[in-house]
Image 1 (cartoon, helix red, strand yellow):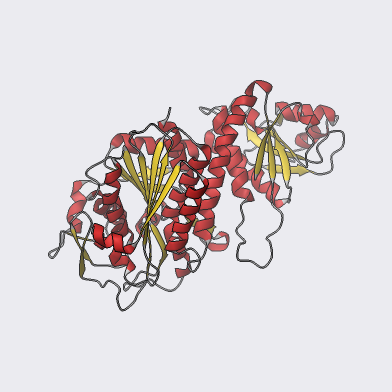
Image 2 (tube, helix red, strand yellow; image 1 turned 30 degrees about the vertical axis):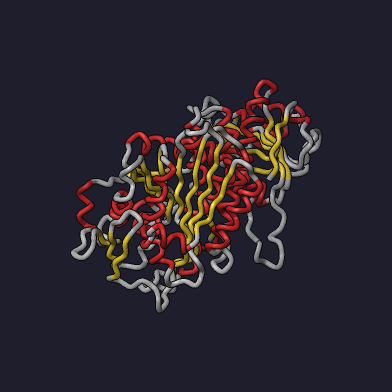
Amino acid sequence: MEFSVKRGQPHQQKTACLIVGVHTGKALSTSANDIDRALRGSIARVVKRGDIAGKPGDCLLLPDVGGIEGERVMLVGVGRRDGIAAADYVKICRSAAQALKTHRLRNAVTTLLEITVKERDLAWKVTQLTQAAAAAAYRFDEHKSKSSGAVPGRLGLLCADDDAATVREQLRRARALAEGTRLARDLANRPGNVCTPTHLAETALELGARHEALEVEVIEEEEMETLGMGALLSVARGSRQPAKLITMNYRGGEAGEKPVVLVGKGVTFDSGGISIKPGAGMDEMKFDMCGAASVIGVMAALAELGPAINVVGVVPATENLPDGNASKPGDIVTSMSGQTIEILNTDAEGRLILCDALTYSARFEPAVVIDIATLTGACVVALGEHASGLMANDDTLAADLLAAGERSGDRAWRLPIWEDYQQQLDSPFADMANVGGRAAGSITAGCFLARFTRQYRWAHLDIAGTAWLSGKNKGASGRPVGLLFDYIMHRMQ
């Protein structure tokens, strides 16, 4: 998807489709009025007879209009003239972008930056418009014999002359974010026989080769043994694919500045191991590396944009498969931290690979560490597909991540990790068990991880419900790339 800044009068824009707003009360937006004058009142007549009422997200395409440079006009309901809520604006952007896709319009100019959004600025509106357009334009047909067909390819953002510099700068950020999100979705949508731990490592190395500020290192199983990563390696034992520990070090800030460390769960296929999952829907377990995909996507966006901040991405990557050498329920392993773990359920493998990656992350002397994982089905039950679960050992970090979720539209909801829950992880044979029973499953998973993060400020994002969609629209969402990117960029303010 290509984005550009447009200036001038709406009726002078040469495009396949000009997008203009209609407010509630059958009132035309400023740009719609400009078009209406050029069309001698035809838009006003359409609105007056009730074909579109101005409800946020309603869309009506007027094909083959004459009297203006644009070939078509799309009327979009934009709510009240004096200002709308941020959620309504997001809905408007997504509806307009989807309408472009439905009508197979490959280029358009939008005037929706002129809409007033309460408590949001111009830069925020630019981000919402571009991300909605990029999401609608996304398609994954790498493994199809024929292309899925045309999708929107170019979007111009019409703005006032005084706003052009702001819009142009924000577009630079938006392009980087869109590209990072696309990469995350591509990685997650690839099948497990393609997107292996080695494939994730090769993708990271390719990014490092393209960007001087990004240093990539891949640690192999032999070195993991030396480091004492018994928990991570216990998961990899059932697979013929070698595990990888990938680090991506982006150095955009001052030397010695403590980095943000992102740790992404990279189980490229999760059968459950010996505690095997039901067969129905198991194909979706290729998405169990969406945490890793989001970290790689964020690192790609940062490397492209070049902000003045230090960020490290850490990706423990493996498959979880049953095999004669696979871990068994009741096995006890020793983590890199020296703490022992009784594996009661081999399908609770994400926390096993994360705990060693979290211990390893301490060597970067981080400002904060955030892990991202499709960790528990319990989080899907609790929060559905709308919000990621958030747990943290630091209130300020939690509040900052929640705020980033609200700004980006990629929301999270905080859950407690009180000491009261820790007793559910007690084991008579080891320092802890890897599961704490059915009750509060997401929370006890977070409590498990918290035992490996006492050296630094830490937050955990459970994205099991938000990382992908099931059903007829099955596919990776790219979340929470937007949340993480917003959080990192706001740290510099």
